[in-house]
Image (cartoon, rainbow over all chains, first blue to last red; front, side, top):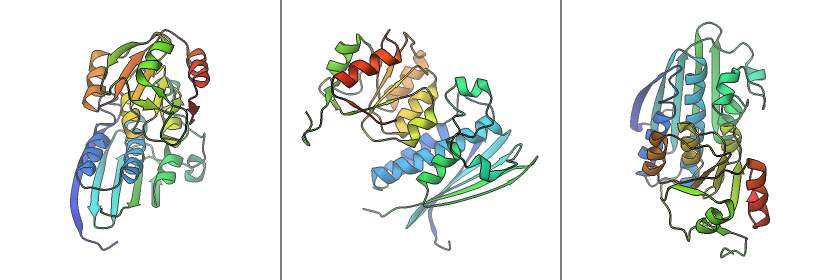
Length: 145
Length: 122
């Protein structure tokens, strides 16, 4: 991906802060609404970004979400400092979750987070190191109107 | 009935059928809804999200509103007599989402909406 970024912004995310959880994705959606990109594409970006943001809030100590808009794609890079994922293949399975009952009471931990991100993305990369953290790159193509 | 011949219900009719209290009126009572996303698990909603739907849930935190926003829903109905905080209602207003609350349970509310012609998404 050597395309020049038209717009780039980094947002911090705090682990465990459920009051603010989702704010970054709301901001990303608001930025995209000003671009003329199709609503169906914006919905995919917002869903993928929100799921990734919630994963940081639920599982990690802290993280960063980088939003990049290029002429052809929206890229969401998420890097967190946290427990990491032992078995990525297992974590990608629908219904698998390590979230606590407390998280489930808050409406999360259905084991659909990573599958939802993959489903929304045109390209999805994930790397993780146990005890260090997780890195995710979501790419969604768009066509400017 | 929508312009494509699909069954729809107006927001005002949904309010009447479910005996709802209106907490935020971001859309007119004549706005039509065709499909319903009933769930307390937000990722299940996001997995099947379709625009302009109704989110029906017992989850009253701010993430229910954000989920509705990311799913491009236009109405949230909170069931089981639960009501979100003022702050959460304010967020819904900011994000242009209508909000109602009913004392009915999820099963009964969904049954009535199904009988009214709406279809479920998730």
